[in-house]
Image (cartoon, rainbow, N blue to C red; front, side):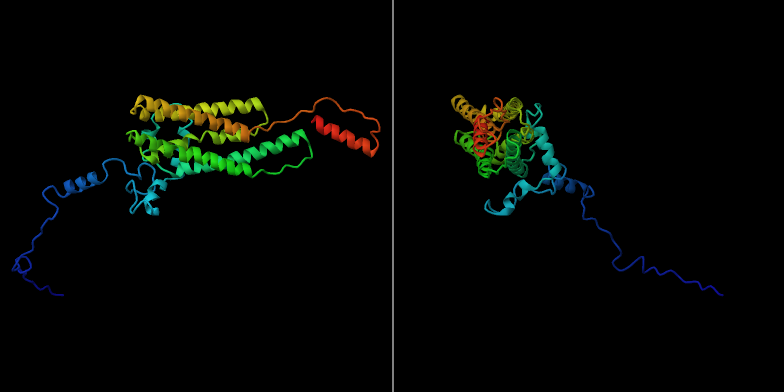
Length: 297
């Protein structure tokens, strides 16, 4: 085997134009421009870091009559909704708007109010059937679906219509500290306490039901006061007092309506003892005894 010496071709190194490398990143290697763009686009934590599914602007594209406009307000996961619901039960949630509703959503308030409607109807129906069974064994219970329509009207009117009207009233008197979405979110999440209370009110003990209803009234009322009053404080004194009185009356009326309409069932104890009537063994005597027993019960 022979080796042949090959001379180097200098044309590869010294071409007519040469081989040059140019940088289009700038003097700082491009990091400054990229960082500047990232800071301009997302000055803080993105929606992904806050627990949201996608990092997108506060409002969707398109007009308010399109679905895309409201899509960001429903772009939240279940874990975040449960965390926000749980935070309403803590008395320390005094700055709920900035610590938990950042940004505010409509998914959680809608399902909180909807779940409350079904728990009110189901718990009330179960409590009524238990009371009738313990009062008169063998009696049949017919579900009152009229209570479902009452629950829908009552809960949605208080949880959705009232915050919208409050927001409009505050805008009218010149207070623009929060948006209508934040108002609905605070009111919707604030009603979460009624869901476990409505389930516990199935227990046929009147005094326990009153304690549960008063506790839910106090806890939800305190939550609304500490989170809404700082916004009302920037309004005129007379207007603020009037709004606070109206909201307090409506809140008390809601608690009383829940107790009277959905949790007024109780076990009827038998009064007196069995009465032995003449001719009790006859059909007429048995019918009379049954009529008297029904009247006494």
